[in-house]
Image (cartoon, rainbow, N blue to C red; front, side, top):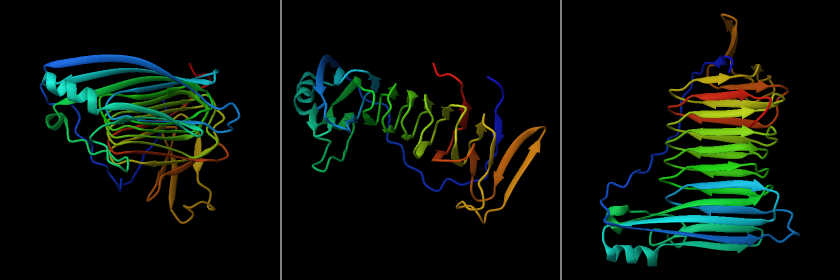
Length: 299
């Protein structure tokens, strides 16, 4: 891959989330693995459909296809410090699956989830067990995707055209050959996205301790905004300053060339325009670089 153009940044990350504790730090004497499948069928008359997966421990892998059925494959791993705690884990933790109008909703339920749906997980030392749910899901291509997990797993989607919202804590996020727009955020892990068609709506990509690597098509028209404290930005696109009519009309900009490589600096803001401009696509890291690629083909 040819060298990227560099966009140095002078900025301050104003908000930071505290990462949850990863790793078990527990001793387990007993384990059990359970695998199962389930299918859901959307009403063919629906103009909008979505899948929501709320996991706590484990990976979620979603792939779009030309069918009309949602196909769920689950591998559940239970680790427990005793036979009695294994029996408790089997009873008080389960995977809830339901259909609600135009949505398929999948969530891990247990004593750690309150009535409002919020999670207060006290750790394996308190419960005496862990439950890990690794899921693989096939969905109709145009399904909107909403995924979240916390520990012991990555999030990935492939070949979808609907909107997406992907949230992880201790793991990576990847999206391959997608044509929708959306958000991807993790704390400890990289974010990697490749667009089959450039997004038409706003997007936000965020990692505190990981690189952000985004591949667009050559015809990208978008306004790009960057925020980082200890990272760098590398762009494979020719970019220009935001016109005076933008939100940064009163910000002083310094665009110049160093050794033939164009750089872009802003004193208080970090926004540049690719092509004719368009949707707002923002990138944010604390300890990671941001790489903006131009690709003719996506594998």
